[in-house]
Each structure stands twice: as C-alpha cells, then as structure tokens.
Image (cartoon, rainbow, N blue to C red; front, side, top):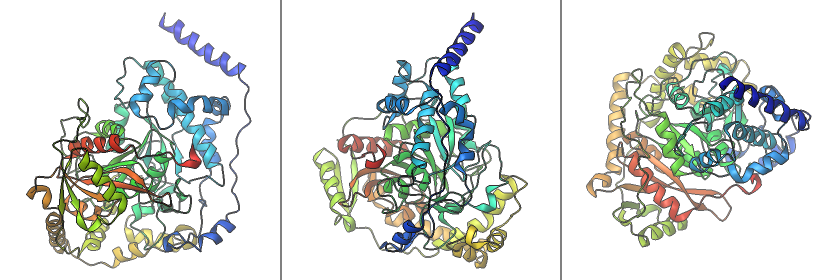
Length: 548
C-alpha cells in the first residue's frame, strides 16, 4: 500500500510538471559596474570607496545549474502566491502553514531559490550575498516532506538555513572568502552543521563574509571577499555598510533569502551585521556552541551564533545547534532549552543597566523611556575608563597558531597553504585578484613576535578590564546592560559575556539601528526572554523597501 501511495505521488508530480508550462532557463550575466565604482568614490565613508562590486571568480550560472529543471516549473505567479505565507514569517508560522497543507518544505525551498535568483540577477538589486548553494537541497526537502509526521511549530525541521562560508559543510567548499581555500577545501560537516542536520534543518547554501572574518586587510570594506565580491546592504545598497564579518548572513536574512543564517563572532561579527541589517543576532557565551570545523581567528574569543528575523526563531535555531563537542576544549554541556515553554509576557521585574555616555542617541533614549514606562527597572551607569591594550596582539597570536591547526586538522589535505605566512605569499602572486585592498593585518600577524607566555598575560589583563567595565551586571544585580549595535562588542568579547542584538528603529537616513543586550556568562535564555519582550513591545523590524 505504501509503495502504491509513493508511486501515485510520483505520477502526480510528473503530471503537474507536464501540464505546467516549462520556463526558459535564466542566465546570469556580468554587468558593467564602472559607473557604480566611479560614483562610490564620492562616498563620505572611506571604507565604502569600493574598487569592485561583482565577484571575479563566482559563476552563478554554475551555482544554479542543479536547480534549472525544478525552477523551470516554478513561475513568478507561484512565487507571488507563496509570498504572504513565507515573507517575514517566523518558524512557528511557517510550520503552521505546512501543517495546514498550504505549504510544504519543497515549495518553501523553491521559493527561496527563486527569490535569490530573482534579486541576484538584477544589477540594481543584487546583494552579492551567496557564495554557494547545496545542489541536493530540493531532493532533501522532498524527503522531509515524505517522512514528515507530527512536527512541532517550534522545530527547525525542514527550514532552509544559510551558513557563513567559514563553516565546514559537506558538499560545498569552505572558503572563508579567500581564493587560497576556494578550489580545494572540501570538508566534512562542522559539529554545529551535524547538529542542524540531525535536527532535520535544510542547509540551503553558504553566504559571503568579510574575508578571513575581517581580520585580513585594514580599513577595507566590510562584507568584501575575493570569492564573493562586495556584499551590499538591502536597506541602502552601496549607501550603508553591511557590518561584518558575518555580512552575508545579516544581508541574506534581512532580504528573506532563507529562514535564518549562522554567523560567527570574535568581536562584533554577529552583532555588527545583525544591527546594520535589522535582524536579531545572538553571540553566545564561548563554548555554548561548538567551534570545531570553523575557520578561526581566535579560540579564545570565537563562537558561532544564530541570525534571524525574530527572537523566537533565534531561540529555536540556537537550540538546534546545541551539543557537547569533545573536540572543542571550551565546549559546555547545555541541558536547558533556550526556548523552553516560551517567554514571559511582562517586563515587570526586569532590571536593565543603561549607559549614560550613549543616552545622547535619541533612538536609544526613546527606547529606554519606553522600557521604563512598560515596567522595566532602569539603572543608569557611568562605566569606568579601561585600557584595551593588547587586543590586536591577542588576535594576532591566536590566529598565528589557530589557523595552522585548522588547516592541518579540519581543512582538505589538498589545500596547499599551511600558515598565515603562506597565505600572504599566495596572495602576493596576484594581489589585484586575491587582495585588492591589501593584507595589512595578515602582514601584522606574521611580524608579531609576542610569546605564548606574554599572550596569557595580555588575555588576563583584557578580561579583567572588560569585567571592570561591565561590573554593574553583578554589583547592581542587572539582567542586562543595554548598548547600541556593536559599540561594546569588544568589551563583551574579552569578558566572555554573551550579547543579543534586536532591531530598535531606523535613523532619518533609513539606516537600521539596534538595541544590544549584554548579559552575564550563560545568561542566553534570560537575554532571549528580555529581547523577545522588547521586540513585541516595539515591533521595529521592517522589510527592506526594494526587497518586498
């Protein structure tokens, strides 16, 4: 009986494809960007004086080739009919539509593939967010549709997810945006990717990033990589910065290219692009999520984290990546669910620290007043002056040792570069293609002769200074300290404190701005709960105007 049903379903699919008109293939063509580059030189921000927009090495025709047949039967009419069910919808809403039979995982996946192709093939709207796509994702979606039983509305099951392209993923190269890794770095899945797959998430593809997680060139554009080209902000294409280094993750979520994306952070690399693209980003306590199989900067500070359109999705997503990893020395066994039975509905009893020096920001001040009026207890703080000496030294020496370990143990054996120095030498052979903005930070790593003993002192000093700045969390028994965007991400990083950033509005120019919650170690559940209350109170996030 089961075989008859499967065969019947198969024939229905065949018949429906035959009755629908087959659309001609869409061809991606490079456009003349010379005028755009010329105009960009007048930008007031030196980091946005781009030398190029489009990738010189990616061919989106090749990337989309595996989907040509399926997309040939997915029309603009299909896309438009699914938009109300998919666009800006959170995971519970998507799962509800699927349970009710209005949607399925295959259609959801096709919707995102069509949408990515639609905008990335438009010279006026392309965001250069995608580096690769999973060629098997439609087949995997069909399998999940076929095997679906009772799926919780709070499940990651069947949700198409994008990964920052410094995260090892089977079947797609892991490049960190660098040509040194583009051809040969075919790996197994990183630990968090295995967790996502075990929880039946669909890995849709890999997204662009600031090359080597923005610890490569100095003063260069955020969101640029030699592999992916220049990532652009959907709220102001080539007008506003994308934030970095998880630029593609922030941009892709903001533009609704997937349900959610994974970013990674050393210092601000989740909070910055989340803030700049009006999405929710969680930088968890080091060790909450595994770092195994991720191209590193610093094992001291690195962590992956979820980037989503809503706080509820963020909690669902981080739950799906949890797991104790014996190969990551910092890994923690987290037994609680970050979503649990849901979040509290009132701000009464929530105690928040407000930083006096940034109360001059009118949007920040307005949101603080709103929190106060709605029941939160507000404590104004004037933090002490601290020293941040040695921060670059920490990153330099960690990367000098951590990158070779990744290349030796987690990269494909065919990758020829084995150290930072060898990457520098590789790039010098064709610097216009491989490093058009230079590689000043990599040069600095090579020259830095700080010993490991000296490094330990630097780390301890920085941690102490960071904890001193955030001492009110303990002294005043605060649930969180409130910041703007990634203003205090470096301080939270060296303290090893988690941060959650949630959209709080838009400047007069239309540029997004977010409220960032800094909490004590392992307080992610509480941060998500407070972030959810704030999100429901303000409902600030808006879909970018040109991507509706």
